[in-house]
View 1 (cartoon, rainbow, N blue to C red):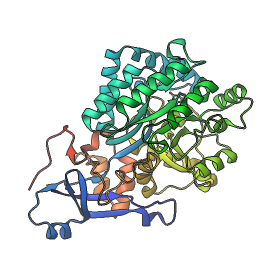
View 2 (spheres, rainbow, N blue to C red):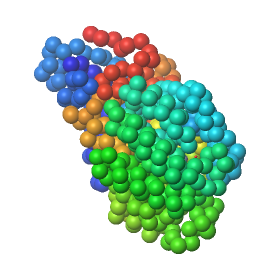
View 3 (tube, rainbow, N blue to C red):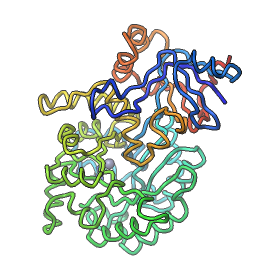
View 4 (cartoon, rainbow, N blue to C red):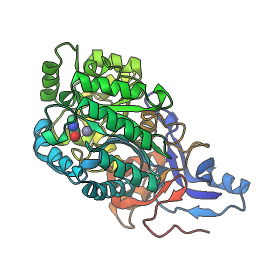
Length: 442
Ligand code: GUN
Ligand code: ZN
């Protein structure tokens, strides 16, 4: 066993359900007792030490120890395509994202990109992710293999499209079915890996390929509760209009998925900026989740996410970096941008507290992915996935942590000021990811 000593903060409760302060668990001088990767106890360091006087202690002095971040929407083939500013979605896809995605047809290229992508996640403190995959099955093999080797919690799938995109990214419904089944067989349920059926968006998906998606979800090994579904929804007004033209029989964008049984509690829809009340009611009823991607929505000018309306309709919201449209993999930056955008919405916005931001970056994502019994907070019984954010001495972040009134205030200053350079330690199931010299052991 190991007893970690740190300023420990997590959100085992739901800040959207009542007083946000009630959702927080925070110990300025806290302890987390970990046995074989699982949290055995958590509380004030003094009492944990008294009860476990002989266990080795790992002192994490300075900064905050938080649950590993959960990214619910991030594109692995776009790690080299960040920073294409000044374009709306459809132009950005054509000019920035899709040419790079085509390069992953080469498995050797994909292998290097997968390594860069997973290095990037870990160096930003992300330990669990719903990863939007590649259009190429061999590229998915290298992603899954590398994620398994590292012990990351990754849910991902082959991206499926059979129209409108550039020719080399298209497949037939038959090939989509065969290749997806193959990947499911090889990777779903292996260690911390799971499969997500992933049509790119209805704009590039025919009714036939959406029917294949339904077949894949329904035939999932272990039954229907076992496999995830993800896609894009209501991101951009031109996209929404084009989908309406392509699916004249559908009531709204969400209906294009719903007609194929793809709106369930295991569905995560990225963006949903331009959602109608009807769609929100349908998502709320189904228990489907929205992945809010605020830097992407800002960079592409997609719009201001209606978080208040999602919550009012009972739709769960988590955070996604949406790299490469998003401007980086660091989830606290997404939290801060989410806060800004809700502020900009004025009375239509939902005023987010630091507790909301931590919840959105951790436990909400775990809930969205059906992994909340395993990760997302530090409750006993959960796997110890954690990130230690510690500022460089003398930095403005360090100065602000020194002057924080309490742990909630320290959290606010962290969302305002922390950067990936402050990620000092990352743990996956209790194992420290090799990056920096180990912390002092006393
Ligand atoms: N819609 C379809 N594909 C994409 C993508 O790669 N990024 C974003 N932001 N939206 C999409
Ligand atoms: Zn996306």
